[in-house]
Image 1 (tube, rainbow, N blue to C red):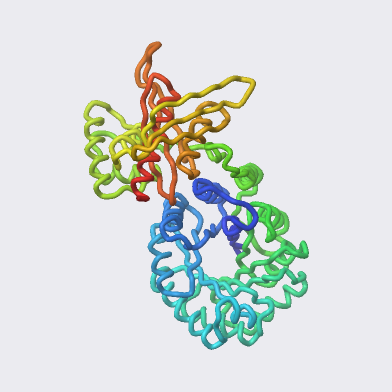
Image 2 (tube, one colour):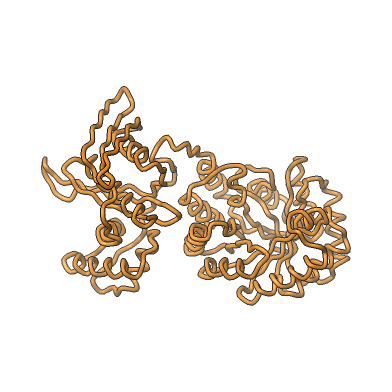
Length: 468
C-alpha cells in the first residue's frame, strides 16, 4: 500500500488564528514529532536573529519528522534559511510561488516568463544545499492549466522532490478535486517520479473530503493542522485514513492511539491567551533535560549541554562557563541541568548594572491579589513601579516590567535551598527570552521573594546591556 505523508502546518497559522510564545513554538514540534507526522512545517525567516534561532532550536529537537521551512524567492533567503535548518535530522526547503495571473502580478510583481525563470533558479539553489526540496504552487486551482503544468515541470527539472498544489480560495468540491488531480498527472507525466501534495482551505467545510478525493486520485502528501483552523484537520484526516485507508490502498504513519492526548496538549497551548497580565504567561512547563556532566567531560560536551538548555553564548562567555564548570566539577561528582543553569547565570555575560534595586514593598494574602511597589535606580535616576499579580513574585516581576517598559517571555523560573535551617539561603534562577535569545540571572537571599527579584534584575541588566 502507498504511504500517505501528513505535513502539519499548525505553526504557519500563528498570528492569523492564534499567537504563541517562542517556547511554545519549540514545544509544539516536539509533540508533533511524538505523533509521528511525516513533515512539520515552520514559519520562514522574517526577523533574522529571532527566526534563525527558532528554526535551529526546532531542528535540534525533532528526531523523526522532516522539518520544512519556506524560502523567499531570492538566493540570500536560501542561504540564511539553510544555515538555520541544516542541523536537522531530516531538513526540507520549500519554494512557494503563485501560479495564478492575479497573484503573480500583485503579490510577486512578475510576469509568467519571469516567474518560471525564478522558480528554476530558486529550486536549483535549494537543491544544491538540500536533497529534499518542495515546490508549492499557490492558487493552483485558479491558474491557467498550461502555465501551471509548465511551472511544475520547471520545478521538477530543477530538483523538486515534492510538488504541492494549493486551493487557496477553498472553492473546490471533491469531484472537482479528482478531475483536477487527474488533469495534473495527464498534463505533467513527470509527476509520477515525485510526490504530489495538496493543500485545501476549508471555506466550504469540504477540505477533509477534498483531501480524501485527492488521495484516491493519486496525491501522496496532505497539508493539515493539528489545531482547529481553516484547513484540513490533522485528527480528522488521520482517523479517516486509519478507518478507510485499506479500502483506498493507502496507509498513514500518524499514531492515532496517542492522537487525542497530544492534540489536546497542542490545543491547550494554542488557546492560551498571552494577555501580558502575568509574567508567568506560558503554560509550557520547563522540561528537565537529561544532563549529567562530570569532571571527565571536555569543553565541547559542556557547551553542547549549555546549548541544549536554550543558551546562545559568545565565545568569551563559553570560556567563562567552562572555567566555572571546572571549579564546581572538581568538588561535585555530577552536574545536573539546574546546576548548569546556575553556572551560566553566574558566569556568563557579567555586565555593569543598568538597574539597581533600592527597595521593595510587597503585600500578599489569600483573599486578594498581591501588590508590589518596586524602587530602582537607573543611571542615578530613581524609578518606581507598582503592579498587582497572582502572588508576590508575579507582582514583583510585573512591577519591574512597568519600570523597564517591556514585557519579556519568562522561559524558566527555578527556586532551591542552598543552605539548611531557619535562616536558610534560597537561590533563584530566572531565564528571560528577548529577541529569541535566553538571558539568565541568579539571586540569593534568606527571603525567597528577594532572591527572585535579584535574579530578575540580573537578567534584565544583561538584556539592557546587550540592547544598548
